[in-house]
Amino acid sequence: MSVPPTASTAVRPSSAMDAAPPVTPNLVRRREVPGARNVGRNTLETLLFRGLSTPIALLLVILQSRFLAPEGRGAFVLAVLSVTIFSRLLGQLGIAVTNRLQDEDLDRRALVHRAFAAAVLLGAVGMAAITVAGSMTDALGFDVAVIAAAALVPNVIWQTVSGVLLGVARIRLWNYIQAASPVLTLLGMLVLVVALDGGVRGAVLAWTLAHAVTAAFALAGTRDVWLPLRVPPVFDRDGRLIVRLALVMGAVQVVNLISYRVELFVLELYEGIADVGIYSIAMQAAEAMWLIPAAVATAVTAPAVHETEERAAALIARAAARGLLYTAAVALVVGIAAPFLIPLLFGEDFAAAAQPLALLLPGIVVYAPVTILVVYLSVRRGRPRLSLTVSVVAMILTMSAALALIPRYGASGAAAASTLGYVAGGAAAWIFFVRTAGLSWIGRARG
Image 1 (cartoon, rainbow, N blue to C red):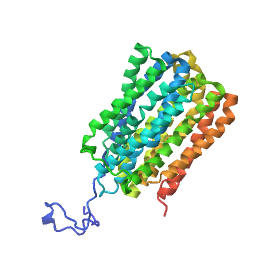
Image 2: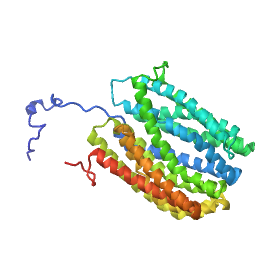
Image 3: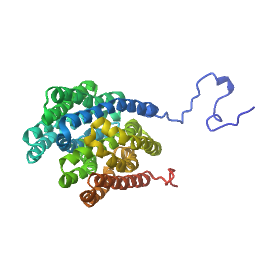
Image 4: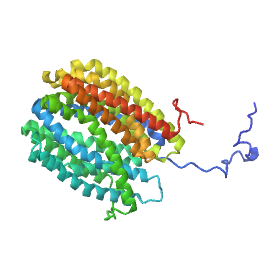
């Protein structure tokens, strides 16, 4: 049976040349895209690491709940939150470097040096602000604030390293770094909180030391990325571009964090620190499901940066749909099991967290793909202001609903407010992605 000629076979030499490799001078060999062939493997590997680290995070919450009580748990959450706000703002320096890696003429090592310098300089300012703010809060005090603030620069350093690793698809080392912090925190709490009865101070100190050791491990594992170390011109053109992009992307993370946590502050105002501790269990259990879309986003970051525009948009669309479906399946299981597992694991004092968790789940599912869509909007297209708009929409609606619902419904009102914000933010992210990528609502490119 004869085969009709195609565009490639029609110009081939005679059959006598068939033994030689065909040469088509007009075709340009497609360059290797980091991580493009390993998206599925990297996703599964990341889920495996997260699957191992999730029980560790659960043990941490159980330890805090059992040894700190609701009031101590609430104080620990607020201390960590104060640092996390600044680390989210500054922790995108590595992702900004990844965005610049699209320009193959730039020196990656020099960009990393600029990111490190910015992390130290801006981190020092953040540490001072955390200490002052914490000193003015009765729930924390000066000593706890100082201990917490010391975690900021190490936290930003290892996050910067992580962002660079995503850009070059070194996912296994990235996973080791992500796992190090909770493992080390657990070990520290077993010593400082359980064995030595260090209370809230011991818990915060364990968390701070874990970030310091994680930063040292990240730097040691990426010596080829940043050595030899040189003092860079931090605020030259490339440095300014990295800092500006990182701060806007960091602002997205901060607004996201505030949006996720704004109800905590309103809840403390109206109901007290104990209710914050109880609601935080529901919140942490629900947001743990975002590990699934986060793993997908991790795997597609490098391909999305280095692929062609059409391929990148299609990759993100498929990945976001998978993230939504996987999260919905897990949410169904969590919703059924939570009323039985929460009092069993955390004690009867936290049994009331089951109802807020049920109210959080719909919003958690709808918002799950946003992590993946942001890879396209912020990292691929370098338009973090769109991601920022998504976060602001979610935050405004969450805050408005929290002020209206929490005084009457307490922790359940906080959960309902969060879900309303998540749904609004998720819808906005899809709209921006479809419009920016030039897609129709069924995922195909518009003509």
